[in-house]
Amino acid sequence: MLSLLMLLGLVTKNSILLVDFIQQLRAEGMDRTEAIVEAGRVRLRPILMTTMALVAGLVPMVLTFSEIGNYRVGMGWAQMGGLISSLFLTLLVVPATYGYIDDMRLWFRKLMGLKPEPETVPEKETVVPAGNEVNPRVDEPKA
Image 1 (cartoon, helix red, strand yellow):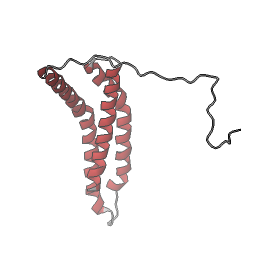
Image 2 (cartoon, rainbow, N blue to C red):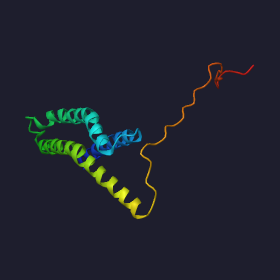
Image 3 (cartoon, rainbow, N blue to C red):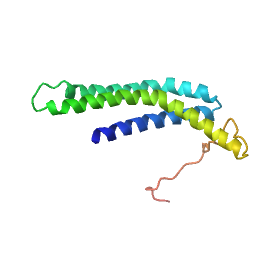
Image 4 (cartoon, helix red, strand yellow):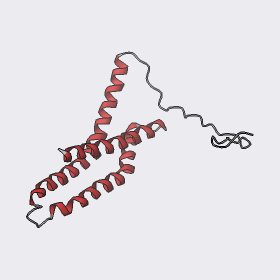
């Protein structure tokens, strides 16, 4: 059960990172398909590193030769298989699902007669403090 929670957490984390990066690229004005491909290319390395680190951590569990550790070998192989399948799930299924859900969202907006969304999101204004102002510290006594 703990292995399943670990795998679900890993897939969720990787999926959130991938979809969030796709949304950032689209907010900058990139086309949906280009954003999906670019996000997959950029996020491939961190996703691979996380998965390979976890698989490398499971190697001692799988390669145990003691009588006591033999009951963990099956669980280790199952976790390795789950990690590798979650890698492909994150890199192939999640971007495709994102595209389908976005198509359904656009179709629903069109069906309801709503205005299409603008292609780019306006950038947030950044407030830069003036150079002459000094922020008083809370722990300093006021004179």
